[in-house]
Image (cartoon, rainbow, N blue to C red; front, side, top):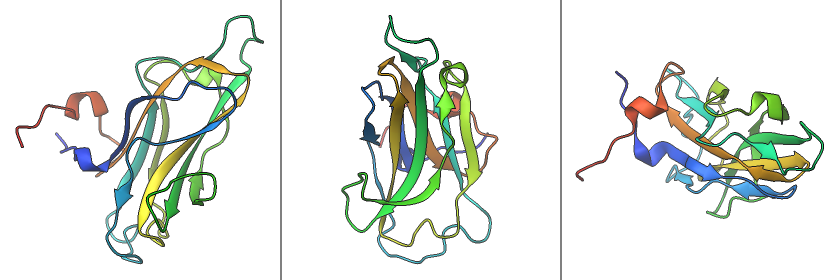
Length: 156
């Protein structure tokens, strides 16, 4: 079993339902320094999947009209927003790809992920307004991990 580090978790079942907007992750990771070459050597992996609620448009809207783009970004300060530097951006996932528990992203961290001191995630809802939807994003040792089986209560 792999070890999951809660400090490397950007979002834990974070609600991203909104009207065509960009939302920042609940947590931001601080590298303390820049240009540490975190993407070099044995890679760490960026993982994203749909949480406990599928991402779906509001009722009465066009079926399948809601999309989600997930972007890994870096920033010189803790304010992760639309002005942050995009390190990786996903395709626009459609509602059909956004059902509960679906894996969206499993990639090794890009070499330039630590060009700035902080990294975080932006979730952009496109198309129609999302009435429901939650996501999990985190960094860990490999793409094989199962987020559900690794999350536990810490006694620290």
